[in-house]
Amino acid sequence: MHVLVVYYSLQGNTRFIAKEIAQATPSEILELQPLQSIPAKGFLKYFMGGKAAITKSAPPLGPLSRNPQEFDLLFLGTPVWGWNHAPAFNTFFAKYPFFGKDVALFCCHGGGKGAIFSKMEAALPKGNQLMGCMDFQEPLKRDPATAASKARNWAREIVEKAERDKI
Image (cartoon, rainbow, N blue to C red; front, side, top):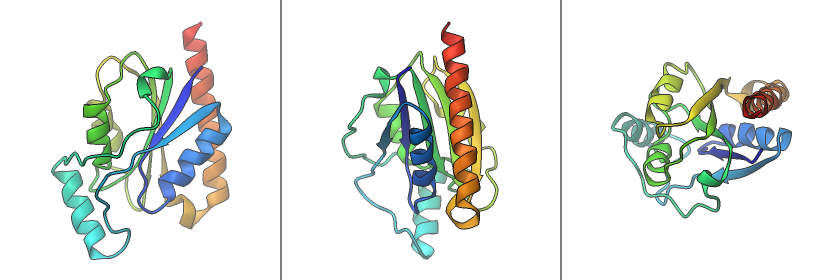
């Protein structure tokens, strides 16, 4: 099973979970990097990030070091911005379509996750199978050890499920 963890992180929470997933599974990792950054703190973070998420902005990304089509299972991770996924995923889905993949979604949030998973599933390229979803509330701030364990266990379960489905 060839596994890729794709994520975007502004403040490090989603990066933390993505790395835990990658360490717990036979995964490669890919960070989405918009060419124009958003401030990680202060009012502009909420204004610029929230506006971009709500308007479904698709910011230009730096080149990808991995081709998602070459993997069997994709873990996709995002922070929750305005009850949506980060705009970097709008670009990723449009510019790098993939099909016939098993997909697992994860998010990090400070408050509620809202309907992020149903919105993200609707935005996914068609022809993929959703294997599961998991959310993490402020993993770096609340309890990193528990969040890391939860991420690793969940990721191993998803990989096992994907492997069983391939048999």
